[in-house]
Amino acid sequence: MEIGCRANAELLRCVPFSTKSSSDQNLPKSNLYKPSLSSSFSKTSQSLSKQVRMKNASSSVVLKAKKDDEDEDLESMTYKEAGVDIDAGSELVRRIAKMAPGIGGFGGLFPLGDSYLVAGTDGVGTKLKLAFETNIHDTIGIDLVAMSVNDIITSGAKPLFFLDYFATSRLDVDLAEKVIKGIVDGCKLSDCALLGGETAEMPGFYADGEYDLSGFAVGIVKKDSVIDGKNIGVGDVLIGLPSSGVHSNGFSLVRRVLARSDLTLESQLPGKQTTLGEALMAPTVIYVKQVLNIISKGGVKGIAHITGGGFTDNIPRVFPKGLGASIYKKSWDIPPVFKWIQEAGRVEEAEMMRTFNMGIGMVLVVSSEAADRILEEERQEGNVVYRIGEVVNGEGVTYC
Image 1 (cartoon, rainbow, N blue to C red):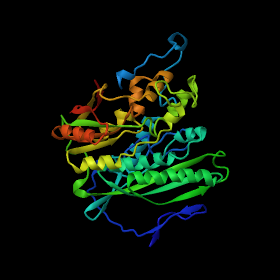
Image 2: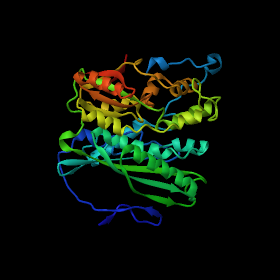
Image 3: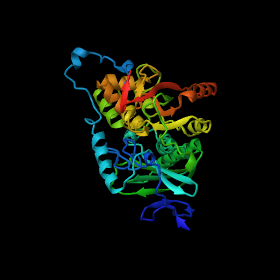
Image 4: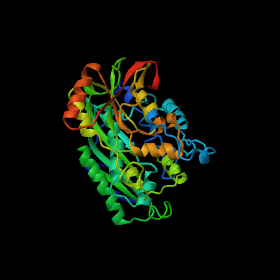
């Protein structure tokens, strides 16, 4: 019997579990590690670049900034200028790959009999800064769960359990309870157990009233049912599942745009009957039940979770060499929050598509034969889905 949390001088929340080791040299490489700007590998609440070892535009939103004559001296804002360098993260993971070969996908696979355990870890980045400013703490836990479980379902895995890490300088029990309640809600939406976690109180390490979060999810999938993208071919269809907004990536750039704009978090978001703060804090969609239901009916060849890196960097991660994606730019509704970000920050179209999900949080690559059936069944069940593109020869993502 082993305790499922590391013992240290901090407060612990954990339950016992038994462990069993196994080994397998034939893990699907496309489902191991790859860089993503959606993880907690190198993330703090101070806008540092986010990478995870376990992970690796649309012309309709090219808006003319208001008062061009007054703003023409302002440069277009970028994620890198906001402090997050995607290319540096990719280089780091390339170096890690030399020490731990076989990295590449959204979740790490561990063989267990006729199945794989699939694990993912993540955080919510500088969205926490907005939680502090808006005093919205009861949904940030949903974001935390979503970022990990959405990663592991890209392999076709059903989430089993989740662990969390909550760190602060001085424990505010009422605030922490709100955060943990959100984590519990996220686990319910994911149909997985909150197995345990750790509460770390570290005086002087964080600013008063602030905290940091990390999450860890484990799921399971039969070896013969792994979604790994190996069979993706030219002509396969890309189906997009809508996001609730920015989700939990790109907030370093969002916060920089907000600082430049003439709006506050209390201002009404242009085009919506909600405040900007409420729109930005909308919890990340948890796609577990919908995606696993679609997978169960057949035809799904690959799945990409659209996090940091946007369409441009995430969709190609599931493709075999030599293949790319052609995205239909006007095939889905882009939420007003992205239009505001682009206009207020004068963000270039390519930068938007490489930083944000642009309204599509998950992309399924399906056979052309299954595409119409999946779209029709999802719409009959009341789900919004979009045919957003197709697989083509030539690597990368193009927009047409």
